[in-house]
Length: 79
Image (cartoon, rainbow, N blue to C red; front, side):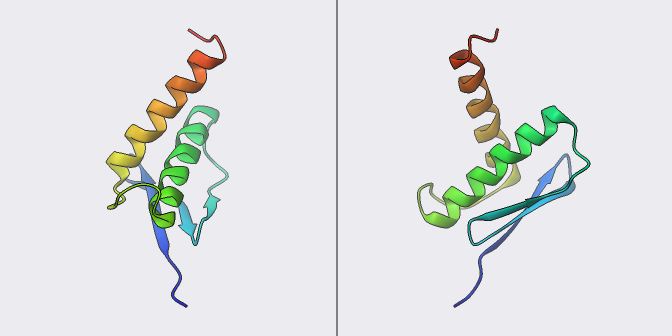
């Protein structure tokens, strides 16, 4: 079986890797960036699982993460 590996970059810096649906994220991110990177990793996992059409790109992942965070903020009543 071949592993699926996806590097995740934020502002050009490698910040995480997703391997077969499991994410490893660097520990030095601030809170806001950590939330964004988690969303980007979720996007990578969904691409790997076939739930979202490929390809994975950091730009698509960042858009996905920002939209998810905005939805989350609205749901929590945060403005």
